[in-house]
Length: 593
Image (cartoon, rainbow, N blue to C red; front, side, top):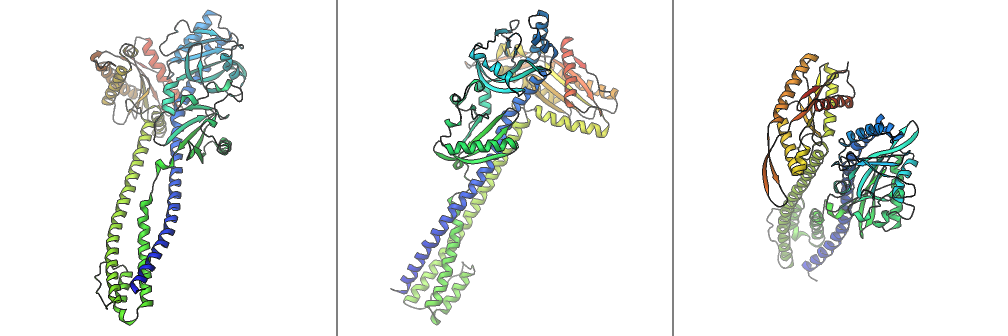
């Protein structure tokens, strides 16, 4: 065998051995990196899913808790056969109905078994008593089951067969001392809540919510949901068996749930088989409602690195081959190849742009020619590799930018109203906390306005929510045009807005004067006619002029105010006083001493 043939065989064998070893190592290494990346993504995703689902429930739960303490409703629970007592209780229930997102409520009392209900459109006004509950009726078993539980409230997905509606119900125990005298609550429109909690379409991501019995409470496929879970006996529930067929996966989920209950702030991740594929499952506990959020993510949809990274390894392979060629040259060639050996050493030190001189004759010359071609090939490969590294670096920077954009979008969803782009209730509370600390530190006075549109519902009823949304967006723009740059204009919910004023004076008189001046400007701006472009389903557009005034409740706060809820309540009461006194006006609430 000729010398060049020996070198070719040797290089070929070494090439396949080294690249085979590096290939299997790279696959394992890249897989571990991708799995770690997916786990980090899952933890961020399930925290986002948790807050996206939990925030609206907690908001409604606060209102329900307040409603359960109302003395008129408690009195009605004792004696709703007394018409005067009943009417006062119904008036209180109707008041809270307007505070709920769904604009609906229900109340059921243990003494009379009467069930009261009204919906967002007020279909049952003056006829809120819908039916009488019976322990013999299976559809009413939720009432007796809830009263028997130790918890103060239960979140349940159920269909009211009497009313023909399916909702996510908040059942809150009505108490007098330790005695349970009834249940009050509200509900979320099932389709809307389902869409906003688990219905968001994300490639490779599936969400489920289950209770402690593994019964499915929310799922994108509504046929998987275990409706009326709390009244079913064992064996009748729709559980995670429907999407986790393997027993070992279900046992792993149960153990993870037990660990999370002990430490509710933890996020558990584990690998399971879902729809015939290995997927990462993230689990987080929502102790406020007693549910668990499950997020399944297909890791192939979130691949961070791929086999193209092998180009980095190939450079090491070629360098190894060159080193072996140099060692073989020292063994097979002696004095006649000294010049060639010197050139090989220069290449070995990274001088790929040299121009080797052909030496010797016959096989030695052939070897010299082979060496020259190899140097040129390594040089071109090195240039190509540098370009690929730059391309990969750019790809990683683009991925990082996309992730940052996603985080900014999540931040916007968490703190800003999706329709008006004003700060939402959560951001308002944060800024009010900051303002309270500032007032306490500087001894200055702050102000808060509670605004409620006076002529909003007739517009919605006559022309649909599209017209109402256009009006709310225009109101938000007018608010921003009149408030000061350092103040906060926020959408509180529905047609309610809050304006938080900062640094409006060192004394009550000055603060009142400045706040009254801002309120007058707002009243004037919001009372001007609105031009609204209404789009109908049949494609017809109509431009209409709408007149909408506003009722404004004002209140000041100083260093003695420590609870933001009381400040909001003062402004709220002042706003309702403005409505009582004829609307389209400003009323000022009292300041804490």
